[in-house]
Image (cartoon, rainbow, N blue to C red):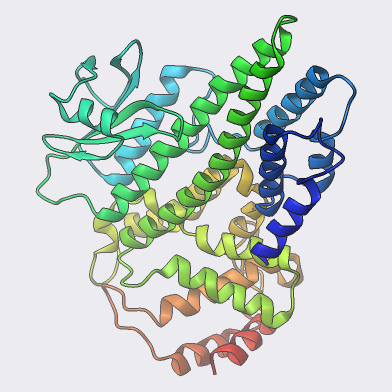
Length: 418
């Protein structure tokens, strides 16, 4: 499907009468638009509008740039960790605190490059105000090499394909090393934010060129190439962030298997068994992948508890879905999955939370994810119990069908796993 979509996207814009003249730069731009369609970033109608032919080349470029900026405004991820984006220092301090909470480390500091010096812009504690951009420190090495450095601190470069913009520094004085999944999550966060920041800078520069009556066609073409590349990269990095976040959640939740991925895969199989359309199936798949992301804010030792949890710890785990929904609401490109996550804890007889919805009033995606999630959890080893066999888990679900679970979904599951 992906290859077919990409082929359609390219055929629509490569060697197209919608292009402004026929030259290599315009052909590259057309291919980028084809990729945008293939990745569902824009529609074919919007792509035609962006590529529409006009008599004046400069006017056409300006119109294209305005449309590209509008795409970014719909895909803005700068609020991905839920903070006030109106105050720059508050942004990075909030990111630092979010990272400290997720990774359970001593401290987190964020540095941005300014005039070849790395300046502190956000921190969870007192930290060195700046670093020189050289190889004498782990922070300087990470910035120059664009690779994570492990020395007295862990230094993760914030970079995109155009340039490096800063470094995230982690202090971890605990004896327990940071899990590899958490490092990969942090690296994906660093790249995502770097790309968002550079894209915003490029948009600011673009608006200046648009307003400048003396701007040249070559300048507009160059900035257009940077915009299309950055928007495409942003889409890729968003996907990577989500996948790494799901893996980190499974690690913190003490699952020995990729629970979020398995839940998402099973939810997709159920969708296909019920013959839902492709778009709905994709949304439910992503919701299954992301339904437990709130657990990233729960201390890891809670999940390692053998036996019965305390009332306080149980409440922390039960509240994790609210945190997850809050996170998802701030990731614009995933906003459509929010209802599925919000109502995943509802139960068929109306005994669930948060609104005691009943039967068909519960979104179908939520009912599917609920069944896939509990089934995958039952057949997996946990710190406090061994995995059930498939037949036993399915029998429990059948007994609870019509009470906790949608009977249609349980029947579809049975047809898949038996």
